[in-house]
Image (tube, rainbow, N blue to C red):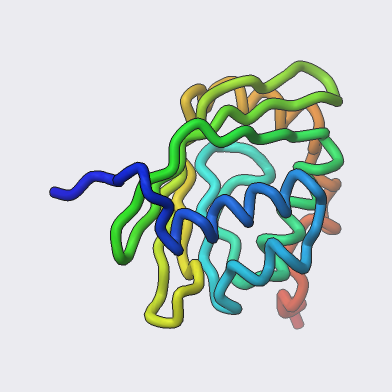
Length: 153
């Protein structure tokens, strides 16, 4: 098992750039770190949870978090040749209720040096589930059903 060193590595620097871009709401800079076919998994039992496929879905997810005034502050970054783990404080500044908890993200890099998979781990999933349900209600049926469903004949 390896541990991170105090000297910044290219992959941890990429994640630092991602957090800076996120704080500045710079979608272009965020997207530069991500592989086009990224899979980003958000835990929980709420309307924003699940795996996001591709940069467009990931950016859409972050747009929603931005509407809730989500902020993130990195506490720890460490990695090796393939993975970076970050621990950060994530909190909301708007909406009904609040989220203020620690998160751990496991970032996987592909052979081209881009992030192709991220798994989020929440320090307080119940808090996040409650907040999202209070602020992101589902649309009524049938509007919330996936497009492309075949109609019955």
